Image (cartoon, rainbow, N blue to C red):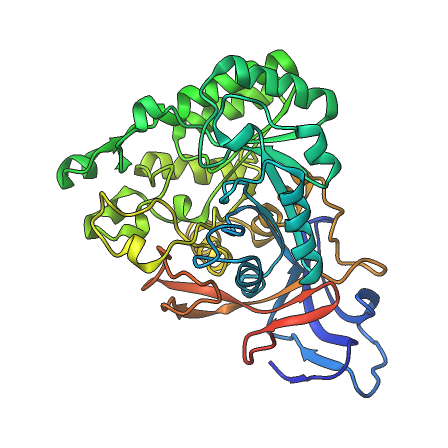
Length: 435
């Protein structure tokens, strides 16, 4: 990429633009001034002292939006903090991320919502704060959802835990419906998953690892579909992993239930055969499931049943993963590899249109989270990702995240985010460290 680094004015020439918000693909140059897209067209007069990017070999997309990330801040900043999480996000092409509330302490009080949003403001980055549905994520008492929303929380979740008490979940949905709150649901019946490590199937039996049956997820999804149908609440099922889950959500949508869902790149890219190496980076929850589940997730993404791809970025210390499979923590980082993994699997191997993939990482999550569209047009805030779709690179143990627990280490993935423009600035560029 040819570039001349200058002031807060950025000129991108020879761009192939794919805008999932308008469903348009076209060639254009882009002039960015004071954070906004000032002018677009094939002929734009340039001036001295501006950053110049020749994008003739790249695709330009709206910046990505992640519906599900764990920033570990406050409480476990040694794994990740807000600043390092933002750097990892920008390196992956993300310009907005929704942070989950299972921090230490959990985000269940107004002061912590304010803290998250203040840190986002200081770093000039969009963080959508998801607050706890229940106090201390214990599933027993509803949090002060109204006060949390007044302070800026944009949704509610007990992610990492499931609200097992159906009556409490029913009351949460009734309350959420009154105020149009978004509920992001981690679906897991722990009576089936307790002590489990991996998907129940051939490889759990062969390797002697305690199983987590798909029923653990499916039973709670079925319950919450019924509750949402009864209350009219808007629910989002996160990190869907099983074939039956996809089928239930597809049918619920047909019946008019206000339901959306996401899955992750690692659940789409891998199936449980990856476990034969005993690599603890594949120990995630919900577990990576069988080939039929993997195929159902891909079909759900293609036919619109699954509305978004989300990373479930979950950083852990090296020693928390460099141990026995039974002792290792659940979770994997994913912000910096999400697009590459999804493009390699969905576009190159499964024939998905690039525009549809970009919609799953931009328009889909933006709509669910109620974000202003990041369409690429004059007058809009400049939030863009420039992507090289022709390159292939092996994933190494080198990340902007503080953690390295990535399941894609050693994989050769196609494509790479060349640079990310966030609020009209250029905080990440592939060839040089711009932080």
